[in-house]
Image 1 (tube, rainbow, N blue to C red):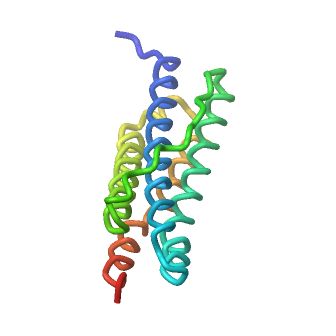
Image 2: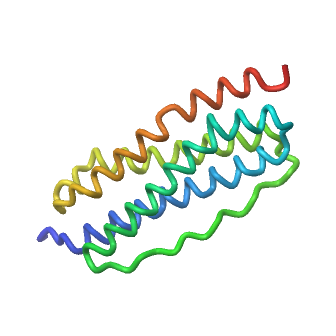
Length: 152
């Protein structure tokens, strides 16, 4: 079976889009946690968790859009993820965000490991995915640290 670079590009675009949707879910959960916190803890959450995820989400959207544009593929519109249930509480929202970030990182990692971004010859896509992972690298650790200190 012949390798179809056009199909590979569509699949890459879809997978980057799915990772971006995961990050939107993480942002929604962190936004809900933020609203439930006092000012001090909300500021900590914003600095340690929300801001890095927001930056990664923006970079993932831009990576998706630019890749689609370079290859004449349809650009996906990204809608905000629905908020969770207030009964989850701050810990539940943060856990949900960490889980969504983990899914996004796993998707991107699998893409990078697959070498498909290299095979389609798109350096900008590879750089964008690397930047997203770099921005997310400390989120899980910061979340554990935040929850350990939360409520003291």
